[in-house]
Image (cartoon, rainbow, N blue to C red; front, side, top):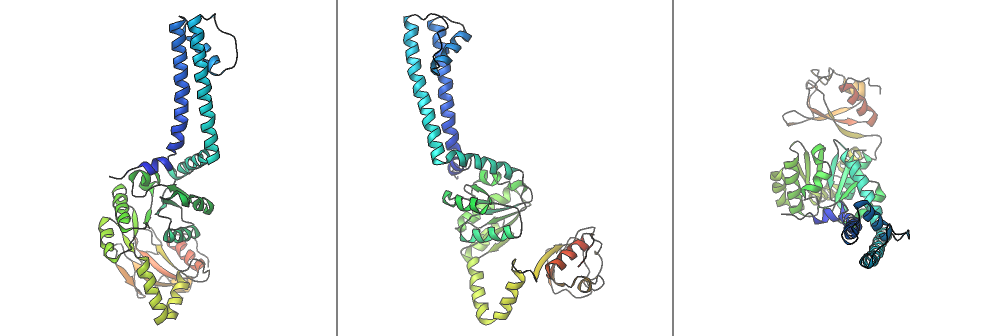
Length: 350
């Protein structure tokens, strides 16, 4: 069973809360003690006893409510000393919180938590290491709403500087994933540093949201099957992809360059996009040739992911556009956007 201590201390700000709560309890306890003491020693009513306690512990210097006896004066001296000690502790605690920046971070995290709770259909990125930082950059460039979950507090400044929504906590803990809005999320990317952590995160995420699309990272080739069985829809090994790219760069450099140009988000001329076909699409039921996609939009349909999850590469001209499938198209970005609008019934102008 995983401990939630790191999440409680860092994300919920319990370290700050505990200090503030302790100060509040001290002040409340002092008021109760003073009121009860004056009622017992002097026989006063609740209002008089409370009033005398307040002016005593705050050391405002107002006159006594009634004349105090010897026991009452001794009790008042004790109350004054306790009051000074409590206020000194409170002032010291607030000063320490301000100096250490904990109070500022606490309110910042509360604001982030409030914003995250209102997110829907977003992506949760678990891990902000070398791979996670690249993924976050790509998501931000594509303007995809996302939340980063990172365990190391040392990376918080980097997250704040980048302007990302984030939670400092352990992604393998159920409470952290819930705080990131996993029930309302569209996708989760588990890019943690170890296969065991990725397996556990995927397992919990799948249990919390069965409809979630999950992408897992694997360090070891043997871990891919475990992550898939844990509930991931897709598993990526950065090292295998990197090695494959190195080999392709040596064997087929022009092919690799073309793929990089087509898939790069910084390229404004050419892009490959996946475009869903809605159930009520006006182009549904037409063939690729009949819909004149190439003539109207200047794009090439290079593949299709059917509703049965079959992948069709280079569909022929008589291929019928079917509701619920996803077309893989290549062309200029504005042309792809025009096709997207045409499939949804909007007016497309190239």
